[in-house]
Length: 239
Picture 1 (cartoon, rainbow, N blue to C red):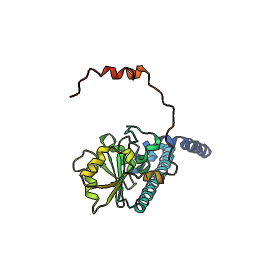
Picture 2: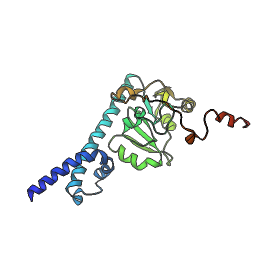
Picture 3: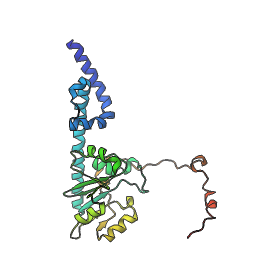
Picture 4: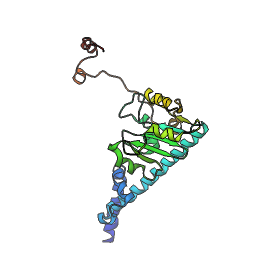
């Protein structure tokens, strides 16, 4: 019986090393909050939970190290707060891996969210679709979750206005921020430097920009060709 149990545990262990990378996100919340005692699920789940715990512990440590590296770079460039949106150069909803700077610095994998890092604080804003996910993924990282739209939760601009004092400077990569945001910063009297890709400087193994062949979508997807679209709107009268 002991030999059978030992072989079974070895099989479970080997199988867990393969499966855990796929399932550790879904199991991590149970490990962190102790929702489900592992003993109730047997050896297989017990081993899985233990592996999940160590994987996530390393992940939280890595996020903290990245934030400290960013803060060090901010100090060297005299930047008091750094803004990291989710966008690429075209404000896409889902961005390629090269532009996943907010995910890299926070560990939060939702499609919508923004991060601000200061020397004393780290905050992530996201909407109601991701409140539960963000709470789980930000646990133990030192990043506070601001639930956008909730009562008494400041907007990004309000937070900056209350945080940056005495001519302190906000930094960000202006290629991933729209003009409306910078205009509002000026209205709020917030000084900023829009020429800083600081996350890119600390992200040593950052995926390269995609370089794939451009192709024209078939009319089955677009409805009309680009050639005929301008003609279709010539009858419209502008106000």
